[in-house]
Image 1 (cartoon, helix red, strand yellow):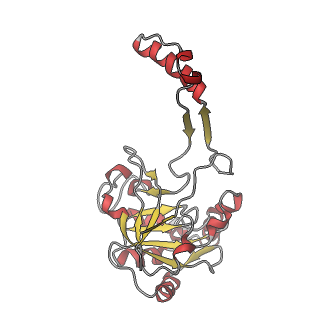
Image 2 (cartoon, rainbow, N blue to C red):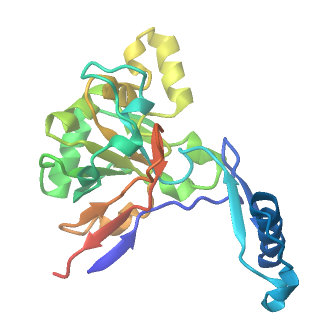
Image 3 (cartoon, rainbow, N blue to C red):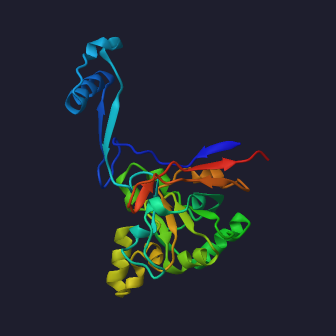
Length: 258
């Protein structure tokens, strides 16, 4: 069994529209922190100098959004109400949705903007099959090559409304992308709306989740490693954050020996 990492790291050293705050207490600082906490919370006195080298354990504290790095969007992220009932949070989603056969669709030749249903059907032909119900469909856009730069958030391709519905009609309940969003870049959508006054061009992939329950995996990586793989299992369990619209995930592909 090969395990292929499909995840983008959470990295405070790279550019993000919502910067990551990553503070590290060294093992020596962690010893002092522990001693202060024991004294304050439990009335226990302990001298950190008693520890080997005066060190205990390091401690990382991060401030970031649930949409930083590779993550899974829950239905509640798409809106406060849905046609099918109350939208579920990430901690309420069935885990079996995120451990399923996967299918990579290569749309890396598409320009910035959106692809339509016909382009997705072409990708089915290129992949050699149509998604089956509950398969996880992953879109290889090539945007991951720009990760860590401002262009990652402006230069990518997403799905239009009919393309999203095509996948959902086939029984897909999880759609992933190596881009920042399953929709087109903000600027592209807003310009399209200004030109057409058609609200259907605004976040059509996300807003489809108000009509039909499904999840998105955004900011994947390394999908090109699966383009020549005939079958694999996608494992992408979201972190169980109570009442949250998304959760971080370590996405991997499990490839059985041929």
